Every structure is written in structure tokens, then in C-alpha cells.
Image 1 (cartoon, rainbow, N blue to C red):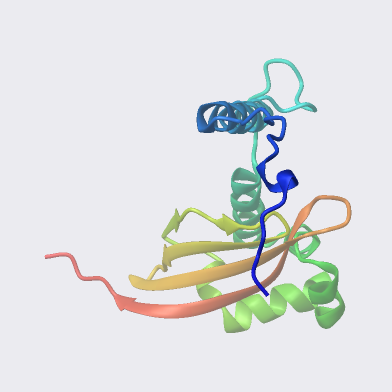
Image 2 (cartoon, rainbow, N blue to C red):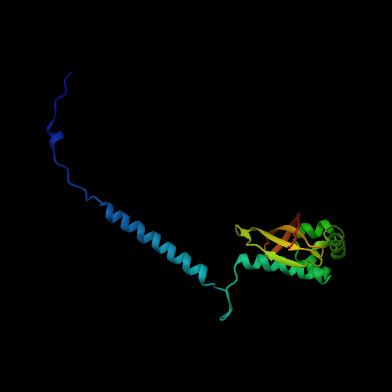
Length: 172
């Protein structure tokens, strides 16, 4: 059987308007530009800040929580240091005094550090990791890695800390 063209094969079909690549690219760039502008606007203009109050992001808040706990430990304020721990850690220790006693016995370098250096925290918005380098009174250096979780009330609380020795620093 041989193919025989029919008159319908040669009919002209009405032409559909073709989108040019420029029109499509223009539409996508407008959409992308709008989304980018909105993201930049919302990240630099907090909605709940009081007028004249500098914007505080999660990075600053995470660092402040760790700093507050280190200050509370330095002043032996067991209640404040314990309040900055999350619910699981508070349940594990049971009381503020038990928490302070454990820190005093097992992590004495946290009680009165000679120097403290905060590195930039990393966060995905619900979990954060804050690295801190400190030197104790004996000149030994320590690396601290704090893990914080954002609670249901949007407050950051400390859920753990890993302390690693870095050795002694000798200045010559």
C-alpha cells in the first residue's frame, strides 16, 4: 500500500502567535526581579521592630544567648544560666544548682575565661551552631561548639555544648 496525500495534508492552518525568546526571557526576568526586590525589602525592614531600634537577626540573637549564659556562669547566677538552656537540658539536670555544679566541676574554663572570641554562628532558622574560642586563666585555649534550638515561642535556647581543648598558646 502506497501513501497518497490527501488535500487536507496541504491545508494551511492558521498561524499561532509565537512567543519570542525575548518576550519569555523578559517575563521571567521581571518575575525574578520582583521576587528578589521583595526578599531584599523584607530582610532589611523588620515589621515588628520599634522605630529607631536596630534590626536584630537570628545570628545576633544566637550569639547573645550564648554570651548571656557565659556572663551568668561568670557571676555564678545559676538561675539565669539554667534559664537559657532548653527544656530537655533542664529536665536532664533537674535544677539550676545541679547545672551550675556540673559546669563548675567538669567545665571550669567556662566559669572565668580570660578571653572569649565569638565566631559567626550558622543557622537554618530553627537550629543554630555557635562556635566560641576561649582562653582560661592558665593560658590554655578551648573551642566551644554550642547547639541552640528555636523554641515554640521563637526564643533560642541552648541544647548542648561540646568543649574541645586546643592547647596552650605561648607568646614569644
